[in-house]
Length: 476
Image 1: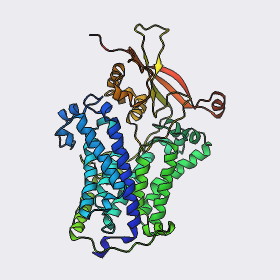
Image 2: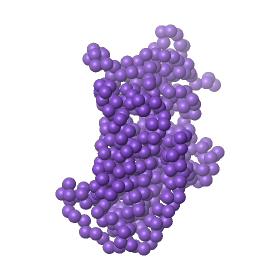
Image 3: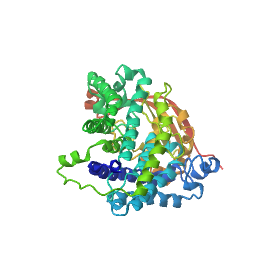
Image 4: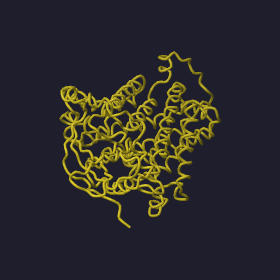
């Protein structure tokens, strides 16, 4: 079938696949380096306990068959090694069927992790990576030109990401409609970056322009993805620029980077090659018949599964970041349907004193990404995902969001659990665990230009209330 492939997208496919493999690599590294404290056998939400009451059909995962921390580590590091191999071109150096098996293995490896990750993996970008990774299985390799249908399926995925996020904003918080949400967002977002203070201090008219531009980028521009070239490439370029703006203004794990990767499916690869003076690609021969049949079958599957997210997009009760099946295929997406007007941070402290008095000295634990020390400028961690820091933001919104894991977290601080302490930037008790741990809720706001000059502090914080009273381990 002559229409089946599009040789002009060879460079777009090449960059897309290598970049997607980088995102996979980051995701597997995040899992390998953090799992013991979060979902390990002695973690806050242990996998063995989860698989004991959640059946395999609801959360397909190899860890239903066997779990040990050593096995999980081997699984995650194996995924990282396979991702690295794909990054350097291994999937293009093997036959087409072997390349597809490599991409399928990446998807299956990460699916097994996400499906037992529980609250720690309850983010939309987990499903987005799995859906994009599944489509990449059928995108081909250097042995065949990119299949048109898979490129269109990736555009459909990108459309749902952007258009869904735009609709959830219009239907949600009124500040999106009156263009005032960015008066607050840069300050109250889950994990600010090093430039977030400066974004917040932009003049308010510019914040209104930012908001209006966001609506255009998410509600109008995505329609251009389905228009012939060069309009589709221009639409993809606008989306990429918008996502880079978000990368600069905050830490959203790999959400923005993965959206950029998906936008490459709409970029005319031949035009891209001309821009970068890359030699023109010679069209390859017809794709194997079995490959065409597989791609057609997958296209039909995606179209059938698209009924649920399409219906959700049209619904006045739109839900965001929902998977309609246990394999995280063809999901619905969205972000920031509501924006917090103020920022509350849970500050965790400990003491090594046996008897508590009004003069007791409490020492603060430091987190890697979330705000704590007012004088510390936020760091850039994305696309790496600091899972504990993100959930601490939710804990500041409401204790209900932390009911499952906050108690176990405090218990591990009291026992000096090494895996948990490795998730932190600063442990004030390196010699021995504290006798007591408490948590306090503070109202945080960015300082003004004048306050920054006078104090050197990026944040101003005000104590509001006790979050967790002083707690110690039960005596035996």
